[in-house]
Image (cartoon, rainbow, N blue to C red; front, side, top):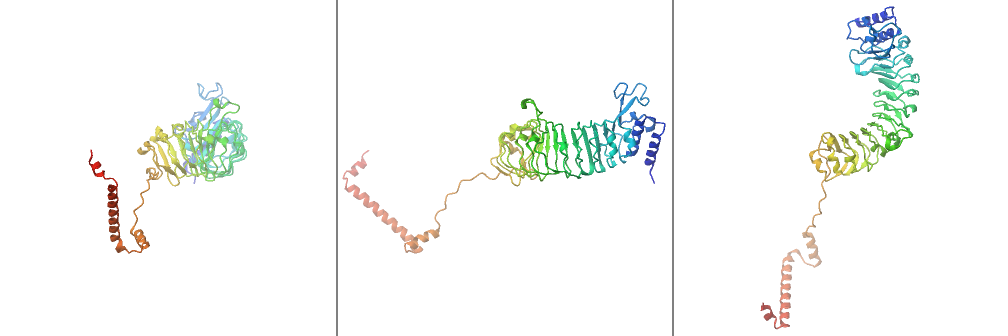
Length: 470
């Protein structure tokens, strides 16, 4: 049998449909509240207050075009319009079903923001109704819930003012072809929908897009070579099925027809963590973006080397671990990343001498720096600052293993006894004749020396006299 909360909600909806609430917008608001199971705990009786006085509703006063209520309170129909319904956090905890009735959505045509997001820890269920296309004035749409399921309807060419879309978290199917068709759209977030697949519609790669977040999905395909996204700020595609290479244009985000020296880049975050089918090389332009704050290609198949020039003055996190990248860390890395506090290059194929400039990065001294691990081959000696443990291996913080410095070759050992025996056998002698042979040779040498001295003195009679002169 239905519980008391369900009965209260149905009573609320029936009352909202009666003449006690004559305005169609308030009827729609209260109908939405009843469907999603939301109660405003800040008021004792939701029927006793005007819908514009509910904590999660914002209305526009048509008299002065502000959000302030008139002196006598919200008036008769036609003096206001419901501008925002934001059922997230605070008093509202959506746990019902997203309504499909067209009458509710028709009554909310003035909405510019609909937010039934996960900040409220909602259990909102059901599917995204096609009737929501009636909200033609929408600028922001957030429908995030761990139990919202079904497919995404192809209705997104009906929102000429829509700027931001956030949908989740159990959606399936694919992104409709018109998902990014809205002329004002700048942000899409469909992350953490593990059953969402297909590809990113080509219309999403346009010059006005600022954020594309698809992490935690099964979205596949490639990134167009001629990406042309001049205002892109975030591209997050971690743990997806994207393939191919990263086009150079993703890190060239300057405004069109604008001198490069006066048009700063906008890209701040680039994340391809665990996108295991991504390959090729990282465009060198990604290492010279003044705006970039975080970049990760960890657990991908990217290869190549770091460019000789690294200039990332805003970067705070760089993760190139578990890749096919190799080569040395350029000397420009230290001065080129003065704000980095998370640096991980472990379990790739980097090697060579670690530049001393890395030890001079102050944020890194209190941050995370992992350079060693399977595949890495750094050489001794390590920079002086690393003796303090600024950078470690990825094995429980152990010191970097750079191997032992090369040692000089030891002198050859003296001839062994077997080698002496070989000489004796060549002379036809045995080992027991070795001592007499040595003693006899010494005697012969002594006799020869005496003869030489005697002959010299015989040829020079004054030799003894000269030897005694001072």
